[in-house]
Image (cartoon, rainbow, N blue to C red):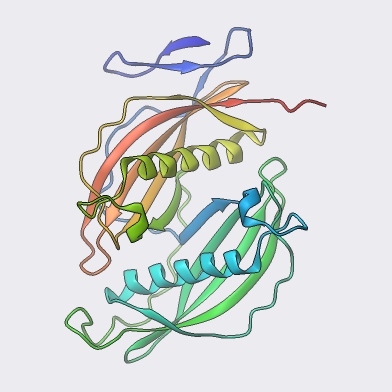
Amino acid sequence: METIPDQADGRVSHSYSGGRPATVTRIDEYDMTLKTTPAAHAVQLIDAVFPGDTNHHGTLFGGVALAHMDKIAFLVAARHARAPFVTARTERIDFENPGRIGDLIEATGLITRVGTRSVDVEVELVAENPLTGERRLCTRGLFVLVAPKGPDTKLPFPPLPEPAPSVETGRLHMVDMVFPAQTNHYGSLFGGDALKMMGRAAFIASSRHMRRPMIMGTSDRIDFKSPIREGEMIELISEVVMAGPDSVLIRVELWAENLMNGERRHSATSTFTMVVVERAA
């Protein structure tokens, strides 16, 4: 392990170099300036396929895939209309390719229709081999979501959004949601679950950058600045700060967003050193 002074305040990060000196190339300056508004990027949920999510064929359960798609459809709809939605209907969904153990699964949603009290969201689910970068369309489907009558449903909904230009910033954005089982007796996200989400974001970003098997080598100090409450959307923003031949430093920002009023709060930022682990032949 080699200690690398890389930050303006004198703190250090650690790089594992497999027994030899690590040559580290700075990708960009370690700028801790945080964005206060969401960037123009697609709303996407990214996860890894673990054995518990698969059937006896070693492929992703169809029900797990549909759950990912339904979750992203809700987040896209609620973020657009700032209303509490429920899923009213899904159109026919045909699976074209499987997601396999170890693949990354990416669900992306796009609003295609805005009605009086309902919206249509088209969701695409893609599997990605983290080592080769091969991407396969698993399925796509249309979800119809309806906002029940109540004080939180404010009509009319905003009109159908114009297609936003793709913005390449080198930062990976991924979202999730806080459910009751993930909260403590105060109704806020468990710290352990927040750490798990940040570690997952670091793993995905490092895997896409290195295209090699990655594990976590070091987690730097993390200070939680704001709680994340039940029902809020989580946005994780990760980017490569430094890269060496056998390790990469990933910065991860954790944000909370109230889906009813759009309020965004910065919860935490930290860096993770992700290390290559070569599989035995």
